[in-house]
Amino acid sequence: MKYIIGAYSQLPPGSPAEEYEALLAGQLKPLLTTVYRNNGFKLLFRLGLATFEYIEQNHPEINMLINDLCRKGQMEILTSGSYEALLSLIPTHERPSQIEKTTTFIRKNFSRRPRGLWLYNQVFNPSVVPLISLSGLDYIVISTYNQTNGTVEETKPFYTAEMGREALVFPVDDRYSALVQDLYKGSLSQEKFISEVTKRAREGSGVLGTIMLNLDQMMAAPGSSDVFGLLYEIVGKNCTLPNIYIQENEITKTHYLPAGIYGRDFNIGKATSINQLIYDTPMLSRNYALVNMLKEVLKENKKNLDDRKNIESLLMKASSSGLYFPDECRIPSVMRYSNRYAVEVESLLAHMPVTPLPEERDLDFDRCEEFIIAGRSNIAHLSRKGAVLSSFAFVPALFDMAFHSGDGLFADTQVERTDDRRGNRLGNRARHNRLCVDCHGSCCC
Image (cartoon, rainbow, N blue to C red; front, side):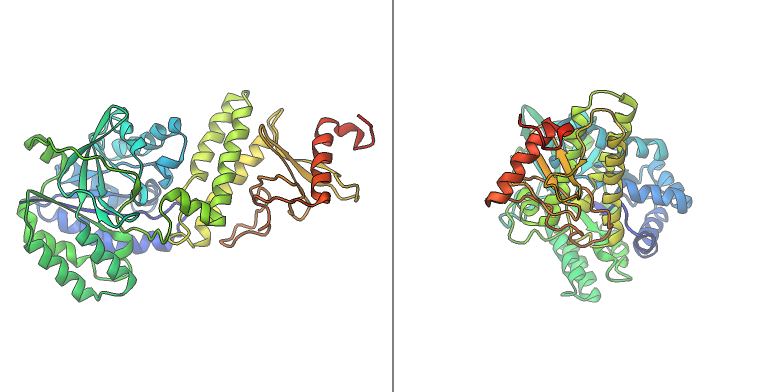
């Protein structure tokens, strides 16, 4: 039986330096040293672009070690969306550039172009299948344990198809992922964890087993990196990599992989999809709506191409994982990362001509100006303190610059409906003043 042994980290952009250092000292350095000391060991490897950039700036010797392992054919690196964005939730035309940004970094720094794709937090949608051939990739690595229905889809490599395109899938053995999750939650001791992993490696059966261990979860137990040494001791002679396996074996099995949240990287709870998770979580829905609204505003302004490229780059960073997974990203610095780039986008858009960003007008004649947000399909207005005055407002917290991990200073600046007469009167006056702002409501048109 052949084994693919892999490790991955998904630290979100904006994570504090202490998190990166803990990952390096507790997991990465022992693992890479183990592989480097034995030419027969092979490792399937995945790090986020933000982690790679941190290592490049602070620990270039680690990059040199990775480069050497790639050159000797002992390591294969997986690419992914840059800044840990969920590919299925961003516009279709942005997905190839997200992947290519990470791919280019890996190719330039390690002289090897990635051939496989890793999906952040293993959130899969069939719409990403056409990206495989479009991005010059060969396969996807993902667990086939589907949290939405609690079933394991398939255990052997297979082809899945969508829109006339095919992609090869290497399914991750969920038994090992379940052990890592139990270790992370504290329901399994470190000794028991290593014992169970070793036992299952010795009981291996079948043609190919893919073991991918979550380094972020293993950080909770110092010394858990010893499990890699035991794994290599048991199956190291039978280690392979996806590209080697593809060359040596013909894969004909097909299976349709449905949309879902796979693996055990985070707990979906009672939600049945990633869309429902965002919809049911006010902070996520507000931040997701904010980025989408800024993209719509940018789309309306066709001028200043240089500024557009800069803004699109900032929006790519603002779409980072901090928007989507509060359970794993409660660190204030992660929230500051997302908010920082969203605010930078607003600042740049405000200086672009004919941009429908908020204007200040005294809508209710109380001598205090309110903010008018006029988009292509909606109009909304806020008080100076952020309260929604409109009867039909779709208003992300644009002016919440508190940069903290709570719900925001203006927690009421979300989707609200006011059916009282005052709300309807103010909504009508807002629409009138948008068309006739010079008269400040004093005309009779």
